[in-house]
Image 1 (cartoon, rainbow, N blue to C red):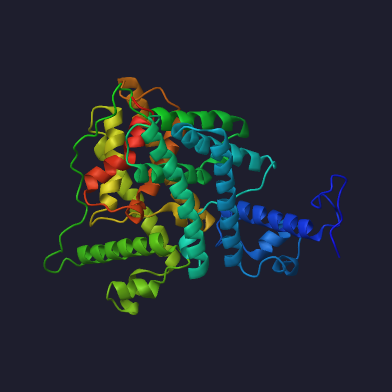
Image 2: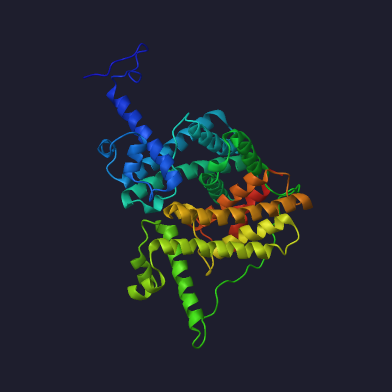
Length: 427
């Protein structure tokens, strides 16, 4: 049987075009799955949930996808295909590197708004790539890398032509993408009618930075706290237990960051620490408990940095201290700190507690910006948007060693935050 043609001679518009019908249904499934995965997390979303939300039976859904991992994989491929199609459109309309970079950022927010309004499909936040099986993960990582390198080339082209000031392109690209990906955490609470203003504020921050000075911001030379304690002497059992818990949390955080929640094994963590399973499970009752504790530990470190920053004079110096202090600790013996890519693996009540504490910390971060606006060290910016973009960059900073060598941690931290503090536009 051949497809029927419509009055224009095309086959896509015919109600008898089975391929078009199949593709439309598959697209609807991926959109709905992405929406549920972004909100609930894949761990809390079943194939039955997705089927019922679409008015399908689970058997009908199996016609399009056999397993949840396959569905997550297809959602990620669809998201990256959409991103690359967007880059195609941007390249056809914008010529300068700076205009292309800001167009990528602006389109990200407008795409989110259009999905909420039902004008386009939802796309999945790329949170659980590490949890995919080897074949799926390799394919998604290859697609992601191609997208990353494409945006990085916009920055390099902009530097060469003069629309973007000299900066470290790999670190800058990672910070930009991290700022965008963080939006799944906070845009759900923002009224739709504010998205245009948010998109403009985000582009302004990336273009012009935080610093109010005519020259690029000069990062301070800070000494950051050393959190690791020396081994306890004698029979201080309480301190010994604390250090054991600290070792569990640091090793657990490394595995969660590297392999995701689903890919992390408590037995493997115990083996890495050279402890018996019995000794490990005496301290850690479940993988969920360990993940929750890892978030609490990272939040406590962030709180320590913010309290220390209160002693600095200018608002922008406080921002500098917290941003680069987080980066330094992440890449020291006190690290790692948790990546928020695993946040949806927590049950909703625990997730709400972590996000509430995170939002509280972000608000304090915003307070540093307001202090900076008052003392003249920070430009007049949209603080609410800026604090979220920087929070996303802080989260992404933990991935920089994946993209480039870090020989000098201090210089690497400056390279990473340079764009947000001084902007891309030449000063």
